View (cartoon, rainbow, N blue to C red):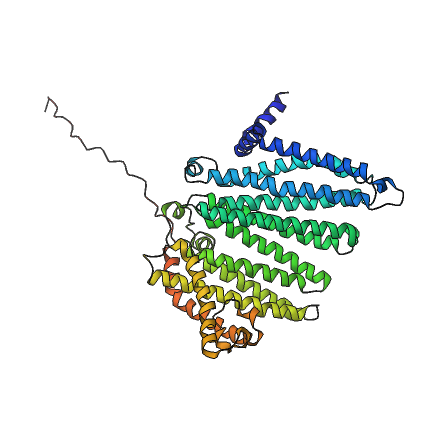
Length: 510
């Protein structure tokens, strides 16, 4: 009995306090209970009305009743979990991130990752509660024929995976520091995204039940494995970014994000290469290249907006070993290290994809792999050139106007100017429409490779020269930051002052 008590004591001590707080408030409040009771009433009414009004539900040759009822009930379940649960978690976290309560996140002794994990775990527990209430109704659809239990549980598992990612997405949006106007815009973006996810999920479920071979199709589990890996990876990415956003500004925010992305890049890349080898097709490698380049283009905007110098808190974490310090420079917070990390990641991706395509040129979609590299690598060069140009302009001309954390905004402004201004001048000078202008008016567009095929080769050279030139001009800044990346000097132990030598008093016999 004492051993069991000790086990419960250990579990109680290790329980996430955020989960306890959130679940207590959810149980004490009326929102979750009201949603759950409404949900049960709708499920019961839907199933009862269908059984009473549809005379063909019990017919011997009718195999559509189970599928139809399952689609309706799963749509209600998915809509409830995609709209109410993410909104509940996001609104509560956004209120805690408001200006009047944001200091509580920094004075608490709870670690940032425990805060985000607690919010996510509590949202998932509410999701499990709703699923447990819906599972009996969904299981009854098996008795109506037309759908089997493996299909029911597989589709519920897919929906649960999507709901998990949606909960993390809502928490991610709530962690973004913004004013009320921007928060309202983010709320609209989140609502639109969740509605889109709901529509796509319902469409996928309907196609699996009514039109395709279902979960017994030959390529279903291969696609399901890729979907599961990418969804889990995306959920983890939003988690680590959320942890970084709620961490204090003086902390090493970028470390967890860059380590996670590097590990995900290795794992997903290895999986895609193995899959490509098994099916003798370059399609998985193409997906890996596109995913890596897209993440790199977004990450370069975040990297150039990071700090140029390191505070005492972060410098205290810098290794003293030279090799470890060089490795830490790439992963720790800082604009120079972030730019170097992205360049290495994208260059390694392009090199490995080119080597794979050259080595296994007989695989299917070999031409598509080469075309993917011709599109993605120049786009990465353009993003790198624009971001480094914006950072150089900020350092040399706009130091007092633009802070380092707003460099991404300057980059986007330069991209807009480089897209709109040349096209406007070309339209005025040449008098021709968008697709008939001379090629020189397209060269500054960051997505010129996707717009006009005729200037793709010229864009390759232009992007390479621009990116190479700005890189050479930025090398002094880069090496200066690398030299400044040093740990705090070790202070010698204080030396206790020696006691003064007091002369012995004269002996009275002297």
